[in-house]
Amino acid sequence: MPDASRRRVTEDWMQDALEIGDFEIRPLAPSDPRARRLIGMLDRLQLSLYPPESNHLDSVELMEHDDATFLAVFVAGEAVGCGAVKHMPPSCASPEYGEIKRLYVSPEFRGRGLGGALLDALESSLISHGIVIARLETGIRQPDALALYEGHGYVRIPPFGEYGEDPLSVFYEKRFA
Image (tube, rainbow, N blue to C red; front, top):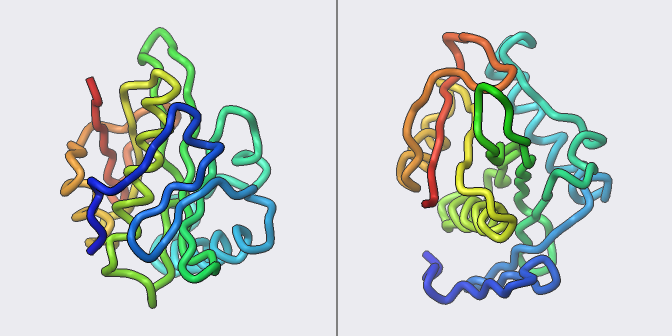
């Protein structure tokens, strides 16, 4: 597993690729064919596990906005994973936070620490923008995802934002400060 202490994050981290061991994490446009391929794989997985009303799949167009960061992980130049974070403004009911979305690693590349490194990079993006809370929704039928988030310090919370109660969903939060 790659050593996270070797991670290089600069002040303007989006300008530099984040390299860890034998893979690289860098920004990629969600509309790029490599990103669309990964998003399509994730959509097919989610639709096989959950009914439509329990899927919260943000479109490529939503992830193309300035308030979102989309990253991909590359192995030998091939995009094998992706993830996004949407910057959510403060409201009466909630402080500003970032919502982790679309975190996915191709099955043949799992178990190498790529998902954790991608999550770390998304969190670094939030911190670089002064956002100290990350939240996310995932499903109960994804034990590896649940273990990843809990292993990275996320704690279960009630539904947030526009989410409602859903017996197939699990909601998480992590505070950085």
